[in-house]
Image (cartoon, rainbow, N blue to C red; front, top):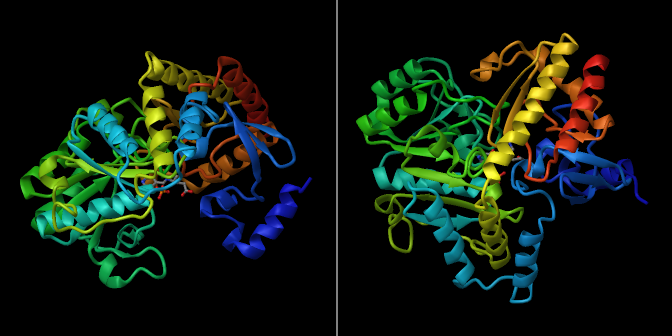
Length: 425
Ligand code: KE4
């Protein structure tokens, strides 16, 4: 049996950092990553055979648990029909129709292969549709790794972007304005300065990449109003919140209609799928109907479409979200009670099957609210829980996820582990 350590040493020789996505490397919590051999239900099993109750769920897709029999059956059936055609296939139409039926703001949707592709394409579409170049994003929100998003707030009112990563040209970063999340006056000020040059405002309607931060009352409506006032496209990046916080996503939860929405994760059922969609007037600007080019060899891949379509059926089953919310609330209430009993400064947030854990008396409302001390405490908590067979997000800046197969017994087992972990901190 190859150990986690042996695998990690080999992986680092042939893959940068030994991982194919940075967060997996445990840099956010310290220590070395585990290599997962298999996953079933609410559990993952590392290559040394140790079981973990899984609260990342592949960062959101595994909302019906690992190895859901209906999703697997759909993929097995599709495998025998062919792996990829590079030509239209019925499954693409099925999934597109399901998304249009479930999300009222969407008339048409284009499939891609990742959340990054979805947000990158949505920004290009908004620029093509408006003829403008500037975009606005929010500090602490993550929209994938396209150049336009790897930008941090510059100084000054206009918060002109500066590259957030080597390799992002200044010329690109200059077009991205970054504003604090949940600060409507700051957004209004920027829009009053240059709103008529802003192609789009892109936002995670619930920010899940700086832990879990919900919009303050009126914030999203204010954003909607500013876009209407200046003719900018409002893009809800629901790659994480879509079909996760509610069946209709965050836009259903808050009753706000974006112009475009991006998806990923759940809609692929675990296979590589992203999508962007919105009202027909904008979506018909995309090639081949319109002039904005966007393409992909594996977009609409038949296996991925089969998995995604089966997943859409799964989450549409009676009572799916009521049970998911009950499970997540049982978890967060139990963790809060355990933390209180241990005298820990601790708070939580929960919506649908998504939750955030904060080592502070109250949850954060924006990126700057997160203290170094709370991050350090989270790191220790992560390892205390991992040692007890509970796999949380390996970063204090991530949200957590439950699935429909996280039973009450597994939630209670998690809470018992937390009682010991809090004492050990
Ligand atoms: P992908 O390109 O990783 O499929 O999606 C990018 C993306 C876009 N928008 C939002 C709101 C997202 O959360 C993401 C990706 N989420 C991270 C987890 N916070 C993926 C995990 C990773 O980077 O490995």
